[in-house]
Length: 131
Image (tube, rainbow, N blue to C red; front, side):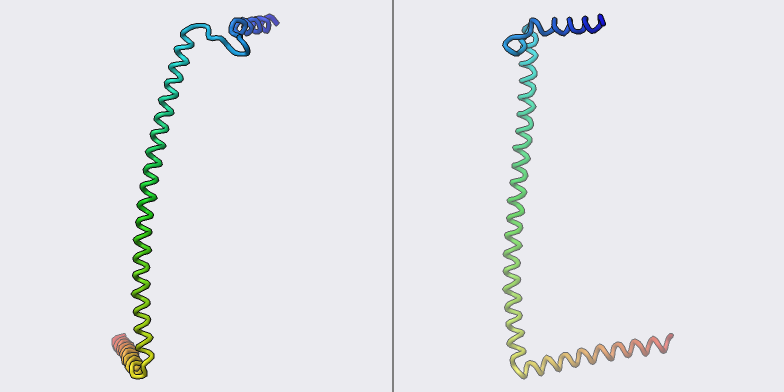
């Protein structure tokens, strides 16, 4: 029980001369210098963090600008491709609208199909002959 009493007495001794209008009074100039040093250290830490965040946001801004330029170029290239494809499709329509052109395309398709069939048959015959 004496331990509790001693503990209580040491606690009250710590806070009795330090209370002033709800707060603690600095007991010496050492604590004031320590507080100033801690505040200066905290300010420098915050300055470093602010500078880091500023450089980070600058880098993010540059990256966004770069990606926007890339997307603009891609959009322009897509528009150009769309124009070329549209012109090609218009030419195909004109070719297939004429009766003589349709006949020419059908004849070319027939020759290509005949060539592929003959090629396949020759490969099968060679395989059967050697196999």
